Every structure is written in structure tokens, then in C-alpha cells.
Image (cartoon, rainbow, N blue to C red; front, side, top):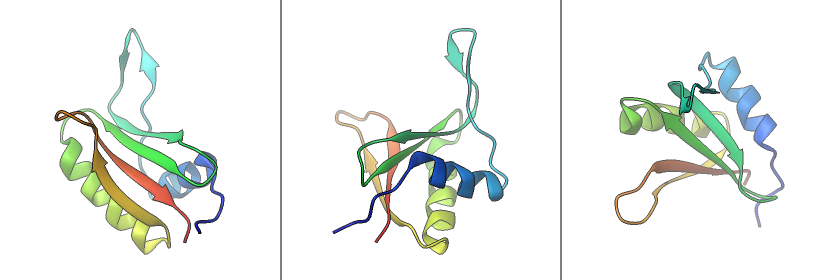
Length: 88
């Protein structure tokens, strides 16, 4: 069973890797990473902006090298790509 994880843990890791984070301004998200708590044992990572697939692939590799368990998923009907992150 996966361990508990906090969105802040993943965010701190990604900030240390030099990633810019998305902010909601003027009715839209600025380009960058967005991290959301998806339960006690999962955090979801999104990329807001162009190059979503490529950026998530890069982030996935960094998270895996940092010891996180990562599953790349996509919302139904061709929706948003995302990474589901947990601790093994």
C-alpha cells in the first residue's frame, strides 16, 4: 500500500528542480506546473500551457528519479493529461 503524500512535498521537489508554477490570473492559468492533492495517498501534477505532453514526460522522469511512483494518465474523451504521484 502506498504511503501518505502531501502536495507540498511534490511541489517542493519540483521547485528544487527549477520548475515554474502556474498561477490563476486574469481568468486563465499562466504556463507552468500545477500540483493538487488527490487523496491521502496521491497527488496529481498538471502542466498548464503549450507542450503539455513533452513537459509532463520530463516531469515524470524527474519525479521517478526522485523516488516517487508516477503513473501518466489522461482524462476521459481526450481530456487533460496528468501525472498521478504517490510514494511506494
